[in-house]
Length: 383
Ligand SMILES: Cc1ncc(COP(=O)(O)O)c(C=O)c1O
Image 1 (cartoon, rainbow, N blue to C red):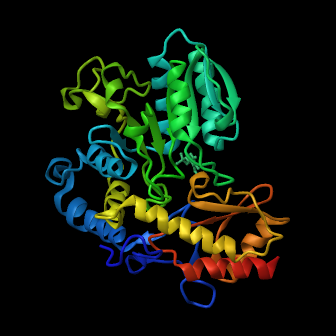
Image 2 (cartoon, rainbow, N blue to C red):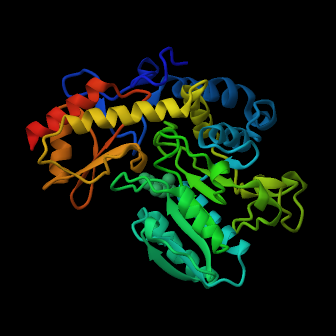
Image 3 (cartoon, rainbow, N blue to C red):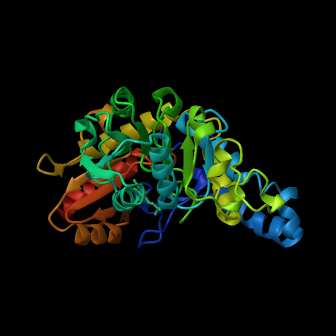
């Protein structure tokens, strides 16, 4: 449990193990927008799951260790971080799989409509899946930038990210949701670049469905299971496409036909990946008793420190205004891949996105103001 105030950048630094820089010291780890660093409690939970649960208890662990209930239990823990009241989130599968289910379930909430409207610059998996979902459901795929979306009465579903994965621009989910609802459409939000780095307020915004990664700012580990949210008002009519046995009302009844579990539990598909789930369970402890508004303020302070350390000539593509940016800052550079590798040799871990962007992620639990200043200084020196 972090000892420092959560409004202070690096407030849980001691709780994390960071990758090593070439000289042997801790790296300046600014890749938390891609894969969060390792919280010690994640490792402890994983070791305990292997030794004290799987090895010692075996199959009885599904009941005795509470494994079976974990997708919803973790869903509620994630819900507390994205502004969702209990009972509306399940954890499991990949973000891509969750997105497929969410888009189809959303389309089925609006029968008779003809259009799936998606962000033109959405993350590739969101765009590829929207294309396939449109084919499967008979909808026509239309695209627009989130702030230019003007849905009409033909639009069934509006699919948007909370934060642009490339530029780090934060979209105005409140206005997008308001416009979608005014047209009678439902909103599917991808929170991958928002969960754990800023308050989202899903219930308050009125978003209908949402998905997100847990391996970025929630630090669940490589390939940690994703989450899916469905607002309680839709549960009774929710008709998911992936009708796996664990989403059945009576999974061990082994009945002939699929009967949906009550509520969001029907989004469960197959056997939950318990080791990854329990690592995530441990990782989420970083956020116990932490106010996401503080985490957001600390993350913005880190971004500001980075931006103010850059020479004016650097082409920053992320908006400077606090309310228009997410957790990472992106700069346009001539050789993003080469610079990314050169920064890594100097102990600064970031990532590159083709063709020309470098992304610097400001995960406040373990990134300090010194880290942000170092990153700006090293980038400036290399440029
Ligand atoms: C917006 C967004 N959605 C989805 C994903 C990844 O999906 P998956 O967890 O299925 O690999 C990412 C990964 O970076 C992402 O940025």
